[in-house]
Image (cartoon, rainbow, N blue to C red; front, side, top):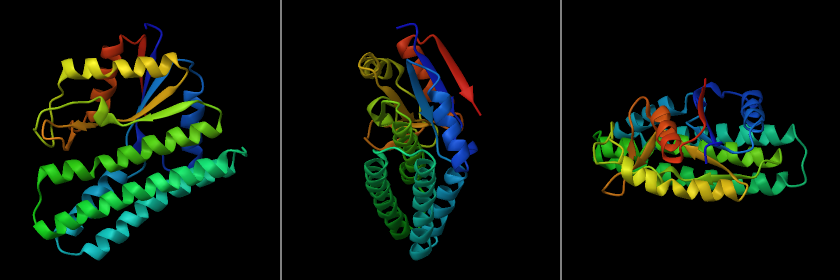
Amino acid sequence: MKDIHVLSFEGHNIRDVSQLVNAVNYVQKYDRVIVVINAFDQTRNKLLAITDTAVSGNLDAAHALSDEIYDLYYDLIQKALESHPNPKNTLILETTDKKLEEYNFRLKKLLSYADKMHSHQDRWVDSIVPIGDQMAAYVLSQTALSWGILTQYVEATKLIKTDNEYGQANPNTMSIYQHCSSLETLIENGFTPIIGGGYGISLEKSMSLLGPDGLDITARLITGALEAKSIEFIS
C-alpha cells in the first residue's frame, strides 16, 4: 500500500476553533491518509501541573483543573460544529461529550491515586499525560465527520507496544508492525484512521510515554509498518 500518506500534527498549535478547522481541511486533501496527533494547546503542561497539584494534596483543585481541560476540548468541537451546519452535528456532539466525560472520569480517578501516594511515579504520569492525546485524536476525528470525512478513532495502545521504561519507553517494532495491519483494513474500507501520538502500552499493560519526540516516533513507526508513500510533519 505505497500510496498511503501519514500526517503528524503538532496538537499544541491547535488553540482555537479556526486551527481545528484548518486541521480538518488539511486532512480532507488526502484520499488514503492516517493522522497522528497529540494534545491540543497547553494540555500536556496542564496535565503535568495537575499531577503536581494532586501529589501536593490539593485534590479538589486538581479535579477543577481537570474539568477545565474537558471544557477546552468540548468548546472547540462545539464551536467547530456551529461553524459547519450538518444534520449529524447533534449526534456527533453528544457522542463526543460522552467520550470526553469518560476521559475526565479516568483522569480524576488517576489523580485520586496520585493524591493518596503523595509522590511522583513515572508510571502514574505516563497514565495521565496521554489522556490529552486521546482527547485530541477523538475530537479531531469527530469534527472531521461533520465535514464528511469517514474517520475512525484508533486507540494507540492497540498498535504501539513498548517495554516498561516509563517516561522514555522503547517501542517493540516487530509487534507494532504486526498490529498496524489493522490500519490497512480500515483504509481499504474507506476510513481515515486518527490516532493519538506519543504513547503506547507497556508489557505491564499500563500506558507508556515514548519521550519528548513521541509524536514523531509514533508517526514514523506507522509509516514504516505500512510502507507509506510519505510522511508529513505539520507544526
